[in-house]
Image: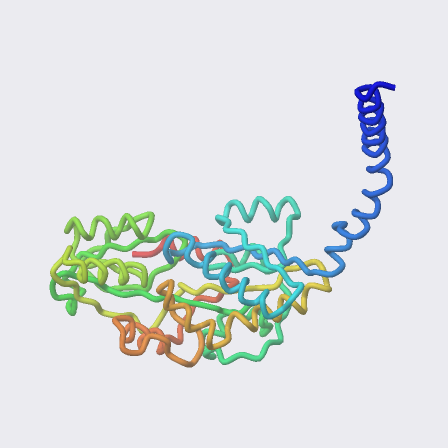
Length: 324
């Protein structure tokens, strides 16, 4: 038989064997692969938690969700098999998803959200060093339904003397929050904090009643030489700029890992990292020693009047409408 005929026969046999293998392989190999790497197997060996981050007051673009994502990674490294997916949502998005029965395991939320989620929250029993006045703001009917994990505060900002507020025109943003009352010549209301900040830079009024975010912006402009100076007067009596975290899971098996994550979030070494996003700790220990934020932090730690996390939305709207 000629040599080239032998080569053709061998090639044809090889080709037939490959075709047969490709036909048979899915039926033989895939069941074994699926058994070893099936989603059921993954879910049995791991716990996946969904955490909604709902921002209702300024903290920098997605800064709190990024902080939670970084904290989740650290938590996952210490708690093998537990994974946390952080979703950054607006309040309207969150309300829509709740209406569609999409309930997360955890919710991080600010002012105006608590009334919408309180029906889903689980009572907490967590050891904490959170300041009592801040912790009490997370209680409803004497039950601890959430835990504060970071906070902000209010500050009056002015390029000139701000000690005599009564004679000043004060710019205030009434968005989702209820700013502290102030006695002054007139109030100029804004829909967003950033709009109030921009008009302040344009000298359209005398004093800005701002937040920790405005304090950061203005200090940054001073350090860059964009403005010569700015004077500050810190509010040490009231705030509603607190971010809470609550367990809302419908899976009883997820309650324990949710509690573990919340406990991790308020540990000292995590709270110290709040300096990276310009927020203040809710615990007893200061985190801004020797910095521009130290005086602001000292005033934050004196606050005892804090809006309850679960204040009804109608009450919030009424206070906003009557703010002057």
